[in-house]
Image (cartoon, rainbow, N blue to C red; front, side, top):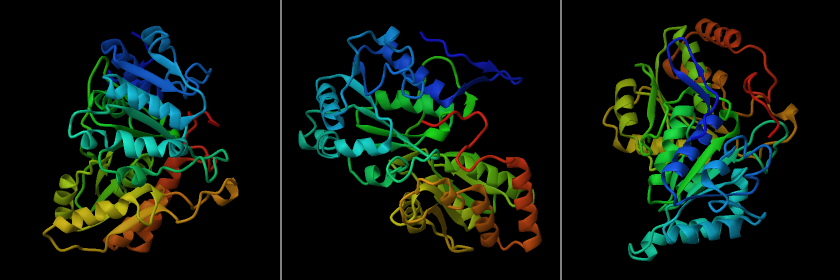
Length: 369
């Protein structure tokens, strides 16, 4: 088994980055199940799909690692065919947008295989997609498109953030008999956290509560969860406490915990990395409000990308993405906080974040791709 370089912190936790956790998950499933195959463009490239496929040929061998030509529709078709024949392929695309070239295969073949065959066939395929951000990614390399995939019956769509969750959810997705889209965020690849050793799975059908509070319910996806955590810490400084949920599974979308939370707080905010109109935030809010039995204390709030393409120039980026500042301001509006407290919270946030370029999330991040 591959051994990723990890650090043991003072609490005894084993610390890995998300990219290391993905690499470890692929190593674990490949060693345990000889039906797992890897398909990608650039598996043997020095970058090894951002380090996630590094040294896996030692475990999979030449027969189970397939370096494909730049033909995403064909790549996906071959992998789906293999899945119907009993294999469990994992496809890695360097960007979400590359999967658009394989939509016919994903939507009409993989997603509908079990239904169209009256249960005779299944397509247990995992498709890894990566969202780009910063470094001039621009309109064609920075889209998340989770609502596009989540709207297709038959597809599961996951958006893990933290290393431990990512490893367990990837292993669970490989075990699952349904086609599963895993949308990774490039900026999350360098997030570090505790990762258990060995083979384990995480729930791929429900959110994860990561902050507790009684004032406002916040549901976030992907990288926006990290911004929401910073916002929650700043809000705590003025005695506003949020229930924060990482919506790590957007299909299936399980909102039962959110309903219970909203009935307690009377307020709901969604923060996601897609566009606002027809976004996952709208679906979350609609699903919650359809079922809640308590009156709301404020109108729901959606924080997301504006309805236009993401520009390439960094000069246009400030203020574009959902961030902790926006979350703090909107949460304070919902609760009804005085201006001096809002300013105090924003100043707290500024001090805690430090000063970074607009297209770099953290000093540990290594771009551009």
